[in-house]
Each structure stands twice: as structure tokens, then as C-alpha cells.
Image (cartoon, rainbow over all chains, first blue to last red):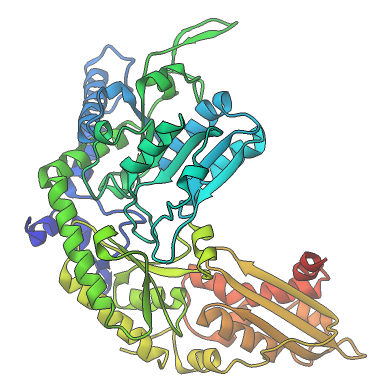
Length: 408
Length: 132
């Protein structure tokens, strides 16, 4: 396992104080991760040394920018073992990837009577775009339920997946329960009925090795800012044939081959889906993030997070009145969403913040999940490559202080 | 370490809220939630013949700040005229709460006032509309 204290020195923000004299304990990486200096520096280097538009100029700066932009795509493609970089399409975030597929693939392939299968544990990003599509086309949404322990109930999967199912879109790792779903098994089951598959990998790609050739989904989405990269950039991976067949999502510059006043023809993949000047610095930043994570090794990242998650679940079980939702550590990624009897999640988060501990409180963009559990909100601590056991200990101390303040 | 926000008074009111409960036949009532955190507050008011607040009750579920705020607000408006209720200023309520609040928590603190004013101005009670 790597030296976590050395990793911590790579992140400038981890030496910043949360409040004067109070060190920062950042346990909100599932909402957005911190950035190592390598990522910040790579983006700075672009703006300071070779800022220019890509795919256009003949001059040196534009060539350097294009090389950096397309070079990042190649490394990101390799990071998820995509067969070809042209299958890595840059979007604003995972949310935009779902919207792109719903708009472009969905509106040409979904019609009344078709079924779209999701799960009850989805982030709103993998729910609302399909609700909009279903409303427009007359398709029906169906849901794989989850069990009390936060794992999927697959007992009725053979009914839920049927000849009417055109798409099965699900999360690889739940952002609330932390459940690591059996993605490969679900993709194979969907393929048997001829359904297209889409995987929400926003909580998977940052935390574990993801190999799209091994998993073999039709589409897969993730966001840069949850994996040490900047905000404003994300990836849609897609099967080549599907992407070739799909109409563009947005029209404009860069996505065309030839334009007349009467009509246009489209550029090749991936640029067909990248209209307008892209987020160049952000792509370069994501490229640096992927280099950084590759250097640590995603196996090592997973191992560290499993170690911390085990440690945290054990430590949290000692806090009286605290209940973590989700499965056992063996099936769980690095998040612990919990309730504490007698204290509202907002109050927990605010009191923890006074101790310098950043956690999230609310529904974490998964209102239906909370509703099914009869909860309006939970507090959520999430762990990443730089989380230490000392930080988990501080969380436990902070929670005991919450109990004291609330006289529990 | 003492908390600057969670002072004794706030926790007291969280444990033992004032004016908690529902009224029969209120003159106006209103209910709203904050979808960001799930807090819900319902306020019901009875006026006397001079249009002054004779009785007020609130119910709901939420964080200590929103709950303490509802107790303090409902206590404060007793005896006030409907026009005074409509004119009740948010800074007055924040002063009653009397603890430093971040931007995010100001929303929790002001939910009760938003509900009270919506009722006072005669907006139809969403929970009644739901029941119909």
C-alpha cells in the first residue's frame, strides 16, 4: 500500500486550515474531490505557456494546445482501456453524458410502449433525463428495487428485463449506500434481451480499476471533478457503432465537416459530439489527474479505500445512536451515509464543520432512495486516496461532540 | 469546545419547542418544505375580533435552527395585528435567534417566516390543496 502521508503532500489544500487554528479534515470527496498540485500546475502551464484554441490554428500555440488536448484524450482512453480514443467524448460532467445519450440515442431509438430500466438507488443525473425522455416518447420507466441492506434486489430481474426493455441504465457504485453493484452481470443480463446498457461510473472510475472492454457497456459516464480533476469536464464512453449511428447532440463549430446555408455534414468521432470550443484547460487537467491516479495505481487506490472504509465502519459503530446505511464493507465503496438519533443531518454537518470536518448533509441528489428509507436526509462522510485513520478518529470525536451538544 | 451556533437556548427550544401543535379551525395556515434539506414547517394562526394573533401553532420536522426559529417566531407574533405580521422583518427574526448563521443556515432560520407570511398574505395552503 502507498504512503498516505506522502500522497497528502501532493494536495496543497490539505495543509489549509478549515478555520483559524483548526486543520481541515476533508471527508466530502464523493461530492467533489480535491486536486493534486500536478493537476493545478498542468492547467496553469496551458494558460501561461500555450493558451490557444484547438483544431484550428496553424501557429505554434494552437498546435501545442491541440497536442495537449488530444494527448489527454489518449491517456484518458487508456485509463479506462477504451479500444480507441475516438470513443471518449468530452462532455461537461456525467450529468451531461446522460443527457447526451437521452437526447441523441434516446430520441431516435425510444418510442411509446418501450421500457427504460433503472434502479431505485440512482443519482438524479441518471433519473431525470430518462423521465424527460419517457414523458416525450410515451416510454415507461421501471426500477430494480433495493433491499434493506442497500444492495439491489435481483430476484425479479428476469421480469424487469424483457423484450420491451430498450435501455438499462444503472450506477456502478451508489453515491449514498456505497454499494458496488454487479455491473458485469447486469450488462450481460441486459444484452440477452437486446437492451442497450449505460453505466453511471461517477463513483467508480475515481476509486477502482474500470476496464470498459472487460465490462463492455454500450455507454459509460464519469465526471472529472470526482477523480482529482477540475470541474466542468466529464467523459461519455460509447460503443463505436452506436456513436457512429447517433445524430449530433449540439450543433456548432468543430462538430461539422462541411456547412452550406442549406445544410451540414458531421465531423468524425469524437468531434461530432463536441460542438464549439471545448474546455481545453479542463481536459488537460483531467489528463494530469489520470496520470496522477495511474502513478498511484488504481489497485492501490482501491486497497487504501477498502482499508479506510473498514476502519471507519468499525469506528462509527462505536458511536451511540449512529446508523450507517448500506451494505457490509465487502460490497461497499468509500462512503458512509448515516443518521444519528436525536440530531438532524444539517446540525451534524454544521457542528462537525466547527471541528474542521467537512461532510455532506442532505439527500445527495438521491431523493427517491431517501424517501424509500423514510428519511429526508442523511449525513455522509466519504473517503479518498488521502484519507487517514487519524481523520476517521477525528470524525468519531466530532460526532461524540455532536451528541454532547444535543445532550444525547 | 462550546459551539457558537448551538447555544443552550437553541438546544432548549429543540428539546422543548414553544407553541408546537395544530389548531382547530385556524383563520389561516400554510406549510412549506425546503427541498434541499427536507425541513417541513406548518404554521396555523387564529385571529381575534381585532385581527390580532390570538393563537398560533406550528408543526414540522427539521434541523435545530429551523425548529428554534419557529418557536421564537410564533412566540413573538402573539398579539400582533395581521398587518404587523405581514410587515415582520427577517432581521428581527435573525436577531431573536441571536447566533451567527452561515448563508446556508439563514435559509433554515427563515423557513418559518416564509411560511407565516405566505399564510398571512392569504396564499392557499398547499396541504389543504393536496388533500382535495
